[in-house]
Amino acid sequence: MSANIRPSGVFDVSYAQDISLNRTRTDKIIANGLFVLLLLVPLLTVEGPLGLNLLPQTWIGLMIRIAIFVIAVQGLNILVGYTGQISLGHAAFVAVGGYTGAVLARQLGFSFWAALPAAALFTGVVGLVFGLPSLRVKGFYLAMATLAAQFIIPWLLRYPLTPWTNGSRPLEVPPPTLGPLSFASENAMFYIVVPLSVFLMLAARNMIRTRFGRALISIRDNDLAAEQLGINVFSYKLQAFFISALYAGIAGALLAFHDNSLSLDKFSLGLSIEFLAMLVIGGAGFPLGPLFGVSFVILLTQDIIPNRLLPLFGSVLPTLLPFIDPVNITSSLSPLLFGLILVIFLILAPRGLAYRWEIFKIAWKIRPYSH
Image: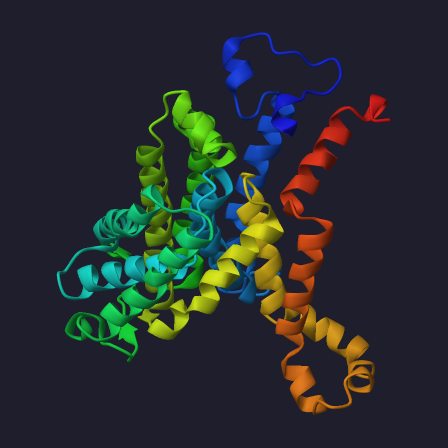
């Protein structure tokens, strides 16, 4: 939306400028400056090479988790936001990526740099298998078909593949290394996960601007009309499932190597629902939707916001809910806020935070004439 609008008095003077993501010099300076500032964050912590204590060390782990989840939700955005194919088994594909990367590193001696793309490609192939029902069904029935992946994949990982995956017990994963360098610390892992997350976000944004991306959008808007225009609907749907699962596989492998441990309890149906909620809150079909949604939900569910709101609601909620033990009210404040905010977004802002951000940017660019 806002990418097609320039400030008053700014015009495109070349084809290269017209198709550029950052069309003005100011946009390029801001984008590159923000990326450099992002890379400087670990240097400001006590465990950084400078030994500074300007930022809490916990921020690094939080930013890494946000970056990993952004990759997973970006894959879901390609499938749900741009192609219009619902999926309730995305957490299972993340599990496939995580366990594939772990098995390749532990049992087969793959390095992290080889295990990551191999896990992503294998997860993409698994996504193709479970994407086959999209050729015949859609809507509620497709949701039920993808829900099958959420039950079948964990069952396979827990029982038939126990010698490889350790079943229900935690599976240890070695930290990434590059020659003599080790990426066991969070500050070192930051420089793998965050730049890769930024790159994959840019790749997804550019992908949607291509012929392939426009075909996905046409299928989402009207698959019958898209087929009449000569678009191979079945082929593009399968490609969307493959790319979505590939992103999930990358996120799963990064999560495995970052946590140095895997457990099937991490990849429950609740996580798949949480991925969808992140996409809805952030804005399905917008490039920045996953970033906004993941950041908002993780900050909400990590007890950062609930702990600040607890003193405000501590005396009000027991009065409003006298039939519930106050101790239980305190422990359930985070999921209660999460559900309430999700309902509010569905009613008042169904297009998500990214849509509001686009409206704000458009208003800023045309501010002399915004009325």
